Length: 282
Image (cartoon, rainbow, N blue to C red; front, side, top):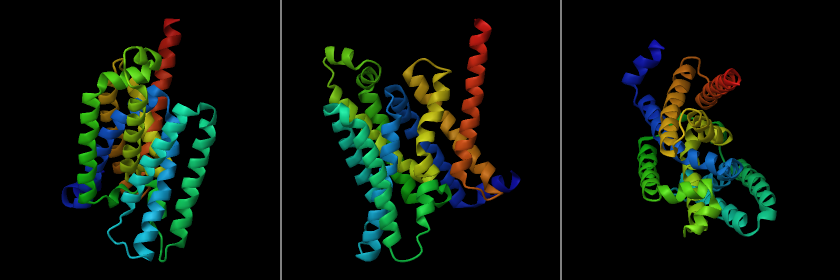
């Protein structure tokens, strides 16, 4: 603990890691609330796994064809948005095929990413970072990108708060009130896609869905207003990422995995407390 605090004061990369956890928690807290309330966790998980395809393709093109301007995050953003729009379109227009397209994109996205990374010359240590996250590798430039997208997410949420909440809770009622359900549903999926891309560096592709949902699941047991759930989930996300980084630092453990374990423990404790209260009332 003392070593972590001492290094946090002295080392810029550790300060960046803490800031990355804070900034990603803001986006995850807001968008994760939409994901949980709308019950689209499985869609968010599919988008997160498709991201590896974009990451791998961008890395392959930059190394093999010399497109040095092309960064893995660029490929991730494009792939995430395309998969979100495709899944959203299928979900709205062909519900009977929704499970199939989600499963196909999930599997193909991951497989293409592995193939691209495998065919990229050199030692591809980035694969493990993409899958399990490496918050200590977040650069100052990436922090600016995360901050900008957080501002966009907050702005969209403030402007379209009533419409998105209506679509989350009661789609048919929202239609009767003149809300363009399709537009706001796709908007939520695009926001989810961008948040997934930002969170990959913190906990990795495999566990990104846990950071989107666990803080919200805990916060929803404490608050009943959507904006309060978002705020609570953001605070919990900051606590989980900071605690995970602090616990994993000295023993040199994967910080993403430790973060999710901490979040999972708190979730189950909250769940047990909730069940105990219900039994006591009954």
